[in-house]
Image (tube, rainbow, N blue to C red; front, side, top):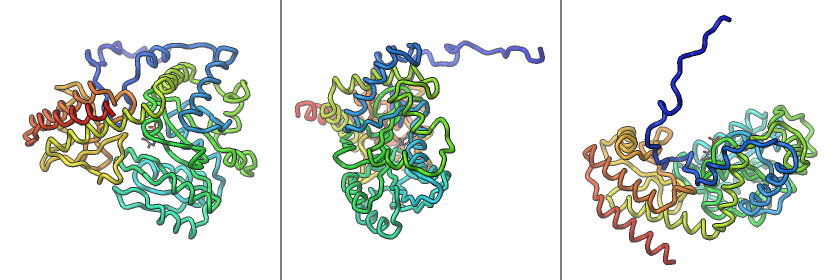
Length: 399
Ligand SMILES: *Cc1c(COP(=O)(O)O)cnc(C)c1O
């Protein structure tokens, strides 16, 4: 034998004694039931798995607000679901209009380009919401078959608030709409059927508060028709929606499903169904508003103006001379709270998705943030921030 086993340490030598509270842009903390379900392995085919899959689809339809029979899962990150939506709807030469508000919306454009689409980019001034009038002008000019955009741009914390109107306009131009709802799904309204979304994408580790690695998407009837009648062969075997349909709808084999991750997703979705969407939206809204109010009362400013600001991930400008890396390092080392930096922006991003929107997590995070800033020499009014957080939470929970 040529190679010997490497000398490694057990996991508990690598992991911190006390886990960090994950308050960044994902993954987010998972409920105990989700964590427990994630340890289950059963046969990926057969009666038991079929029942689990039927329930996952039913619950996904509720969360997407659709009656579509084309709900599919994918073993992979949210990006795999993005790629699955794009590469099944796009053929070489297909005209695609990609609304670009930031990093993730550009990823959709790049995926379409790699599929051979003729992609037109509609660059939105960052950090602003996409303006439906600009999109209509671009639709008129480009006449695309597919429009891609995000509901929430996690990278710079911008919300495309006019998504329902944008979908309605796209419909007038007979253009299919692909929406990335990875960070927003189940944190704010998303009405696939009502708004006329043709492909909706989500991951596990953000709004749904499940584990990373299993993602969901749904196609409308119209999108499915296009998939069934496409001419060009699909280059991606794993991401072929018609093959995935075998497992997700026909109870047969495509590839071995990520059983444990699907169990976790089942529990995450079930907890959403128990909570109900309206209550969940309210919890997210109140928690995020309280966090934002607390941050502002400390004397800091938000990165995005109110009108375009995403609730699911909150972006905060840093005081002059304070490094985001230093703040985050101090927060994790001293307070065991982890938040995110941003892609090239001098901001800190705090997640407000799923389990992150619990009062005890938000208090701990605001305290860790404020006292880390003070430790690094910034002037912030931490007591005022905490008081404002408390005030908004109390008012919100009474509403
Ligand atoms: C996180 C995120 C993605 C990518 O998710 P992965 O699981 O890392 O592939 C895509 N879009 C948005 C809006 C996101 O927040």
